[in-house]
Image (cartoon, rainbow, N blue to C red; front, side, top):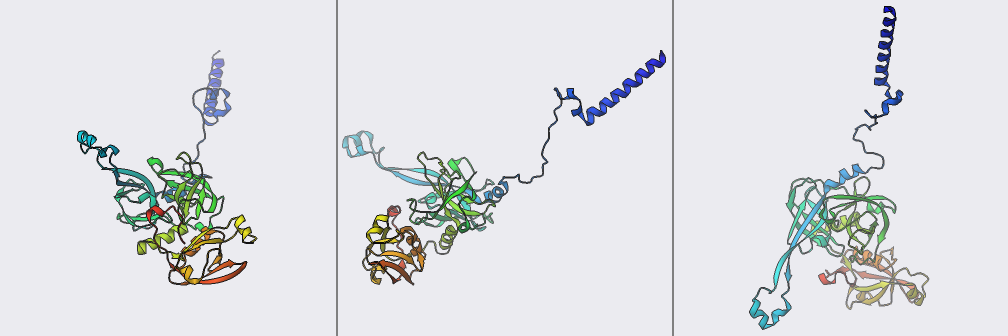
Length: 388
């Protein structure tokens, strides 16, 4: 009997030892072990490497260079209409006289130089009495306007904060429809935000946003407050300055526009060097050549820009250009429509001669024009047609 109990005790001991080893090293072999108690899960290694499809590296590269812009200005409130009534003035005194109040607005900007130069939209800082910027790290500083260009809706401001993280300019002229892009800014004042989309179109014109238009269209969400922010590629390089949206509600509908970085860079350099932008001008009024007009001029294509008017004693008038001429090339570059002509003439150096090819009486001729300097537009005329 003693021998039997000894064998039983040894067997139980060995069984429990085996059970302990199996439950420790291979618990999944025990069917009842998954019911309640410990749950075995798998976790990815914390290696800090960007995941497939992630743009975190681009975001980390670009976001320190995007700032929030806060502006304020005094607005005059007109007097109450009843102030013209002597009886009303007698009882209420001057409490309804003309007064002023301060209004605030929000926008975004991009640090483009370690010295503190910031690129933004003209409409963000237009007429502002005070401008304050806030960096991603929470630092704030007052900024001053270096110069602006209403005709492209660009402005340059500057802060004195030592060395700042400047964004690298990408090659917007190499951008293609379908490229992935990120929009960075401060929509609705909620704080710095990143949205993703693709380039929907290039070279958008005739949008009525500014005089000189050559927009990148994107479906990356751009909302109020994003104006002046960055449109970057998937490596974090700047390819555009967010400028406007098409919306019926004030929110993003997936149609946003950005000023290409190569254009913004040219404007920025001129503003920093001279405080403004100098453009070529010949003194003509132009319109697009519609298919109907092209047919009336016996042309097979609507390409070109129709001269609708010529300013008397202007550069074009002195060179012999006439209403009814169709501009087909400027300095050897083809003109597709009036917007293309506007841009080509604008880049001509004032004071120099330029060859402009026109179609007149179904024949082409070259007119040499001594280019003038484009007059600065009056503020109220910014959204109206002007003489080119």
